[in-house]
Image 1 (cartoon, helix red, strand yellow):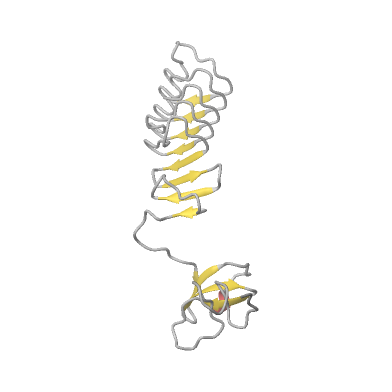
Image 2 (tube, rainbow, N blue to C red):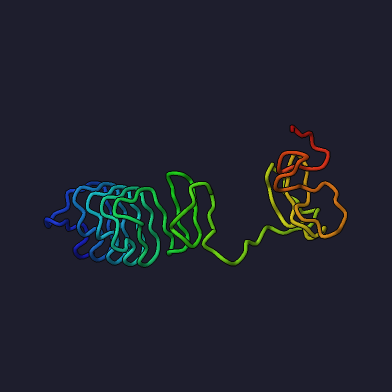
Length: 193
């Protein structure tokens, strides 16, 4: 496109870059391996490398030297001019790619969470199925069992209800602390004081 990779000096000297669209990678000077598709995409990147941007104005006004960012959608942006290894999909899904963390609804991702939805105030809808539809289990799986009906978790080789709907407490998992054992625990489980 017109003025794509023109560079602040009138001639871009970066290498292995791809720009499609008016003013894409417009001020690029020495960055390498950038991909920009759309109107004004990445037009603030000067020395950043390996950024992937897609959508009109996908760069906002921020990234200039940051590297390894993925921006998808109109007017998406990074947090700072030197942000590295971040993801922004439509201003809704964010990622800290260096630490394998995803945030929904906020670019601020808690460093102790793989998936951070703390900025949301609605709910989380769990996978739902009958007892007969349980998946091949792996420790720590969580689902809603529509047969029992209860939220259940796979712990110590067995499915157990987190919150049973009846007064019968069979193979239940306890979350929190108790004087009787470690948490989480399941009835009949060997415990260490």
